[in-house]
Image (cartoon, rainbow, N blue to C red; front, top):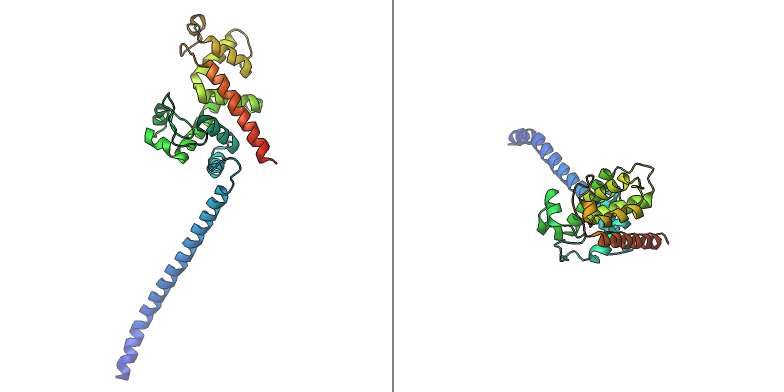
Length: 231
């Protein structure tokens, strides 16, 4: 009997060793996963706790960092567009926190209903800002405030409208890199003489007053938020 027990012990010992090893591995993996999850949660919580401007500061920070955009600019756009309300639909049909048009969202792979999600809205807005900045080709040494004005004008009116206004400015040998000058030509796009001009590609535009006011309002919010967060 004793010999039989010893034989069983010798046979089971390696198996028990393997089982114990597997159980220890599972325990260690659970500890590591819980630790990583805890750290991630703390990171998100830390971002969310930065309520300097709105309840969405953490989101603006995270998306802004990813796309290389000042989070306060995203906040300024949200303030001007929706007053930080993700459920808003404008008379023109723009949706969500950053008031993005559904046809623009679809071009970027997002359906209308997705625009009510704050993170989706802010992410698309950041992508649009970067896209417009790239298409404007203003150069690295371009004045930073002027760059923001042009990018915001594109966000409101669309790149093609701003590009038409710049084309007109260049045609008349005016400064196409100065927003106040380009804004003047943007207004002229409401007149047949100019929207039928050979350098204009997108036809008439009757929203210049709204675009100029939009750029002014967002820039005012942005500068205010910069002052507030730098105190």
